[in-house]
Length: 278
Length: 132
Image 1 (spheres, each protein chain N blue to C red):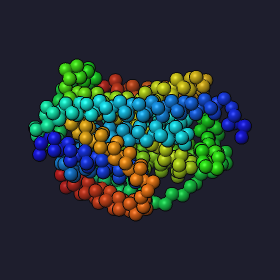
Image 2: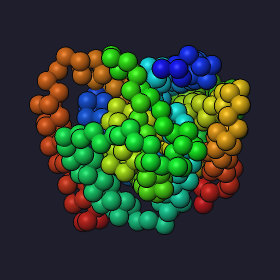
Image 3: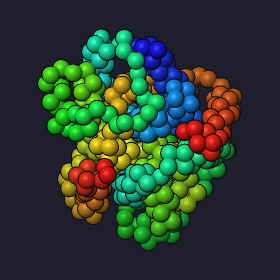
């Protein structure tokens, strides 16, 4: 296979990955790693570097739209970015000492968890009781726009949410993914903020979190331009197409199919990691 | 309802508009660079064989900013792609820097401080010789 053919096939693959990522809400990076390692037999270290760049591309691309609509809680995002970026740097440091097959197994587990999370019915646990002193001091309580006017919400359990975010950051730095599922979990279930706000704020943070470890990986030689070329272009086009499709398509059916595909990929990653092939 | 008529609220919206635009600009700029570099790279090396099965790290010059700039001056496709990638990494970092200025204009000094902490972590990650 020549570089030209390799690039074109990978471009199509990245396009589908970007579409799948935006439809499931998992982001473009998550599918890139199994695509590169299982599909193209790329070393997982190159795959991690490329996936980080894909995560930054999709996060920044879609965050621009959400921030403009005013749904994203920028103060909450900023505060929690201290946790996610510190975590990401720790993750990138651990990655040097971690055997690649262990990384593959952890990746598979996070992928299965993410697939379950994306399919689980979302329960809105947000409240308007102003209980957290810290949230008031940090001015984290805010409003988000709805068709019937702005809705006020408050943020709870800030220390718990902060540590969960730090863990999400470590996973992001170690595996090269946005770990959006973990971020949403921290904000929905622990900090009790409305689902719409947690999804957009998580997406807003993914870019900075990934950038914090990407600067380390760039110097380590994990980020290869030959792989970034088709992946960045493909994932961006796919994410854009996916968000268009999201309006028309039977989302529930598609999500089921994709969750099955992602779980299958995850099992493959764990198996290959276990047998030492990755 | 009173808060929606306050100065703070609208200042916040303006900042959000600006941040949204800056993010979009960064993504578009890096896509263009990656595309230009990609065309040069494929034109020159398209017929060669890819080698990503074994990890050796990227070749010298692609892993540092000075190396990338040197290659871009020589119109090397790979370095132009990598410059696009660096722009993409810089996009959310610039967003953080922008936010610090925005919070300063709002006189929200607590958030100026928190934003600078985030920026500090990233700068440490960049310059702290963590590559190993």
